[in-house]
Length: 136
Image 1 (tube, rainbow, N blue to C red):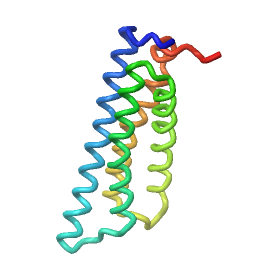
Image 2 (cartoon, one colour):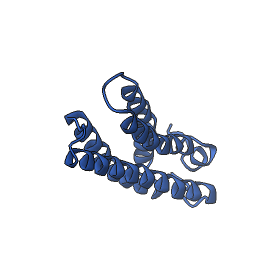
Image 3 (cartoon, rainbow, N blue to C red):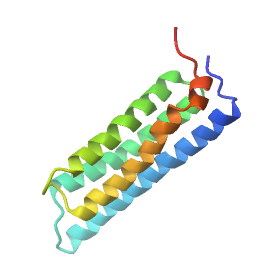
Image 4 (cartoon, helix red, strand yellow):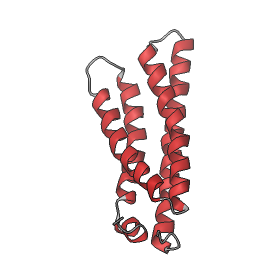
């Protein structure tokens, strides 16, 4: 059973939720910037639109999982841990492909990935391990 009443775990979840909101906010900025670029006649490829839209759509899903984890769901915590580890690697890895997207786009996407890196560290920290003992 999860010990979600632990002060360190509760504080960790507050920070996790803030990081996920930051991830979503940067995602909204990216999508908004792509829209402005397209409206002003600058490059806005289908890749940029789709990726920005998907990453923005993922933010509320991760947030909901973080809320469920803060309520004691180990399964939700495990999913947040997994996504917050895989997504930054995928985001940055794709951004490193030459010519795929403009530098400004890669930088903004990289900033959003940094918010998830924070989530990955917090959800794997000692406070979360103490609050969610290993399943036997």
